[in-house]
Length: 204
Image 1 (cartoon, rainbow, N blue to C red):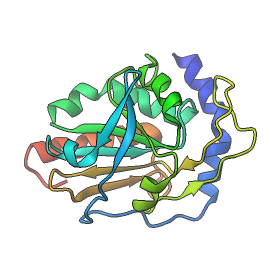
Image 2 (image 1 turned 120 degrees about the vertical axis):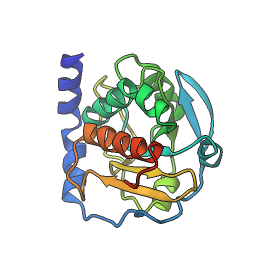
Image 3 (image 1 turned 30 degrees about the horizontal axis):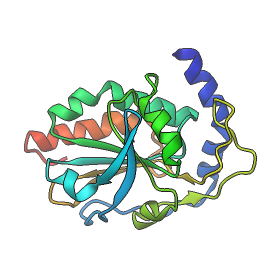
Image 4 (image 1 turned 90 degrees about the horizontal axis):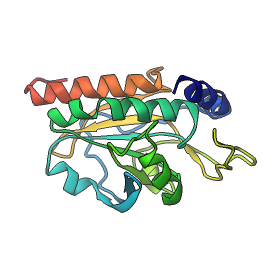
């Protein structure tokens, strides 16, 4: 596991540099109504249609945008979300990852025991329209960019940003790797703390 993550981090270094070098856009902030969306998603290797509106009927939703499956930070983030899934579930929260990866790539990623491990779904925003609705920056596909498996990526990279959305559809918190200088695993620990506070009836 450790070797895979080290190799994955090296493969995604260029992706990380792109985002830290780029101007920061103003992602939607707390108090804003979260844009509703439906998207083709994958859970444990099987695709289905994810609906934010339907998920919110069950409780808070953690929507985390990430650059690409099978790249360093994203692999660590997915693994960390998977390892903490039971705690999010106990807080009544749903997790959904969003990237521009194709559903074919996500079917593999979502079932990979080293990453999503079949614990939570990841959705395909191939056009980048969902990311755009949340005011997130997307870098164009980089020619020749490959993931840790040596497979060409061929899609754009969405800036790493997590939105915690309350059951009322309002954004409770926005966590940005650019603006807040967060490491991938910080998105997990901070969003978990927030949904646990919501569960306890406390303001984040």
